[in-house]
Image 1 (cartoon, rainbow, N blue to C red):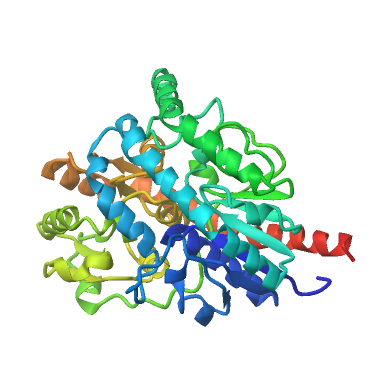
Image 2: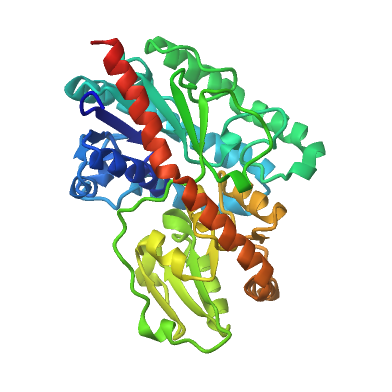
Length: 435
């Protein structure tokens, strides 16, 4: 290492991308580099204790009476307002959820562009890392190289031989792909053209046709295990990170009541993520159904924890150190967010996936079609479907052994440090070429 680098991270405000960047950022600080987070303002006070510099942005005009917000509150509020859309087939969500979500992302990018330019001028980073769904021109026009991270399902990287993103369609559903893509183009083209004009006006290169983020000429990372990945070839600019499991979570000791469970009883972790768990009706239904099983349950209750009622066979909290919980359980019931999906694979745990929005449908489908778990209809599953899926997965000893072997292999590949290596290499090359 020639000298310590200054690395600027700009993640999406949601927990998944930010936690993914926290994991990589901590490796870089442990190596002696300075890490700055230009995260959204609701993360104030949550990043500095981990050794990072906070220089935060607003994605919209703050309300005059706004106080301290929950981390990621911007998207918690947006998802809560849009939740009825999640009951629709994915193709019917294109105009009523996917398109408005992109527009909200675009509005946030436009609003914070001047702030980002000021942050970059203050810190003069040697390398910039962006983990976003839409482009932020300030990140690609600073003169420093940038590394793009895709911490959602890699169908975000478009290709002819893979299903369309957000569809939840399988590899065997090829006859449905064209219709979905036609509907996508119909609902998104005008918005993309307007956004691309703005991106160019800010001094950035035009976006690739139909895509929302630039591909970095230096290096791009995507977070998805080899065993779960799609069969296609990406060019040499792309690096797969099999997992990116942060090491900053506090330890978790299993409560005695759960540790001393009956022989044959399993230990199940239920988490619908910080956004999905805000659907208290869905969460309470799952809790009530799991209360009838012989198993013990750990529940990540989320931002509306006070509104949920747990049963005697359960332990829960508003927030749990997920990377310390998953290794101790036998089964994960999840919304299919990319963080939780890759973490379950990292620790070798089968899944029941109840997708709610965005790439969760794609993760659910991929887990199901490769036999690593079961995809259920989130709002349409029957009580018996859930109980049968639980018993089948917990009783499938061959699958559990297979998952354990896969998890060990993923952990050995050490994606967290591979990601840090790539970012470090890009930064060092920039420093050496600029004296």
